[in-house]
Image 1 (cartoon, helix red, strand yellow):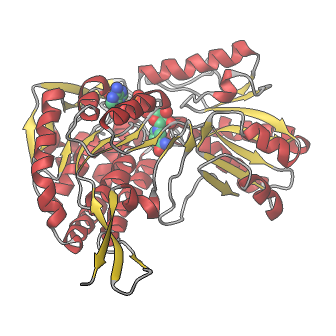
Image 2 (image 1 turned 180 degrees about the vertical axis):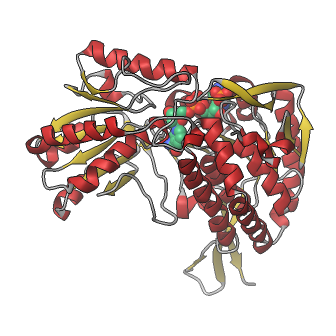
Image 3 (image 1 turned 45 degrees about the vertical axis):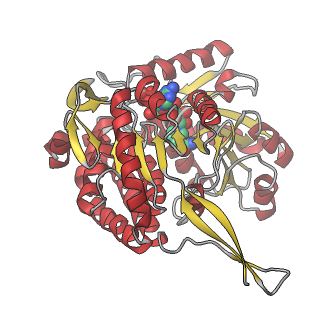
Amino acid sequence: MSSTDSPLLDATARSLFIDGRWDTADAVLPVVDPATQEPFHEVGLAVASDVERAIDAARRAQPGWAATPASDRGAILRRWSDLVFQHAEELAKIEAQDVGKPLRHAFDNIYFGGSLFAYFGGYADKHFGVTLPTRANDRRGFTQREPLGVCALIIAWNVPTVLAAAELAPALAAGNAVVLKPSEHAPLAPMALAELGRRAGLPDGVLNVVPGFGPDAGAALTSSRRIDHISFVGSTVTGRAIAHAAADLLVPVKLELGGKSPNIVFADADLDAAVPAIVSAITENAGQNCNAGSRLLVESAIYDDVIERVAEQMRSLQIGAWHENLDMGPLINAGQYERVTGYQRIAADEGAKAVTGGIDADAPRPGWFVAPTLFDGVTPEMRIAREEVFGPVLVAQKFDGIDDAVAKAAATEFGLLVSVWTNDITQAFGVADKVKSGQVSVNEHGNTSVVGFPFNVTGESGYNHGGGYNAMNEYTREKAITIRLL
Ligand code: NDP
């Protein structure tokens, strides 16, 4: 079974999407199935000159797109959403095989991505400025929202459809043109999305997609003086470089970076609900999620019980290739495999004990598979307790009471998500109010069903000026206008 049966991939093979057309690229890159380590497709590889052509096209197209009535822009985005849902099966296979995730998890990603085009399609003509009071009757004051111009979008490889849609939809709804650089590790779903955007009626040049290497295609984008905004999803290390590039250009930048998010389990928690969610939070997408629940903080009284139950459930997970549709797939590539197994070694060297999993665990081969791993005996100063692994590796620590939970949760520089498990609302708020985190969940890990939930981040997890319901603010500038009535 292969996702290459998809006609969407025929359109995109060996190509770049520039100015509304699929151009055959001078260089191509094989796309590898992480479960077999075999190439199954080829995409075009953009170099700096291709990025320049994409920016040219975007600059030409943007004024016309901005002048298009917002309701018409919204209608195109809603048609795009319909097409995503109609092609959900093809898209899910493409994302699943490209990243290595089980097909049903890819389906969830496609539906969420498709819903974002519908959400911001509906928002396009409902985003407006304000009328302000004045101190004089002959004055009027108001603000209006305007697109920024051409936006550079650079994304990671782990959830490409969602990451692309979460930026494309608000940026385009607001009247910007965009140049999207997906990761060359997982470029296929964003390319397929572009083909559907073309079919939905996006004018030529409004959307351009240029997969390529970060230091080449990515750097060409972030150093161009013809870019008006940079949105970046990726690691904290690269995010810092992007922030420097944005400072040189003096353009606004949105950074969504790494995480080391804890699940905090109080002694009164409903463990039947908590344990499966905790396991899923670190094994979904093989732990390769920025909001993965990679730390487990458990109140001392129930620590042993929780460790045993989490380990047991991790051992029961079935691991396999994307089309087997089991619980967990492989890591995406050799680099990730080296990184994750490297951290497993570091943890063991630091004195942590693998309750289940670890590098010697019996994992299926070939493919970059790593067994779900739980480390006990972890102390806050260990690297495994503070640094992002980006794999199915969970580290457990004890705590006693709210203050200790908050202190241990704060023992990393990241600030993405904190999840609290308790039936005591005072305890839940005791944590929610005190933790330095962009997002907090109570009795679930991360938002699963709140529409328009802002993906807020802080600390080394990055910064932005709005996501979710607020994302149109990120992609517009507010112009303040005063009028004197003569
Ligand atoms: P990287 O930072 O390595 O890369 C992210 C993107 O930036 C890729 O497209 C990459 O291209 C590109 N890039 C790399 N170097 C440069 C450069 N100098 N200039 C411009 N672009 C560049 O991250 P990963 O792709 O490995 O993704 C994993 C990270 O992403 C994790 O830390 C994870 O937590 C984070 N992430 C954060 C999310 C959030 O919303 N907070 C969501 C998803 C992931 P190339 O592929 O060629 O390297």
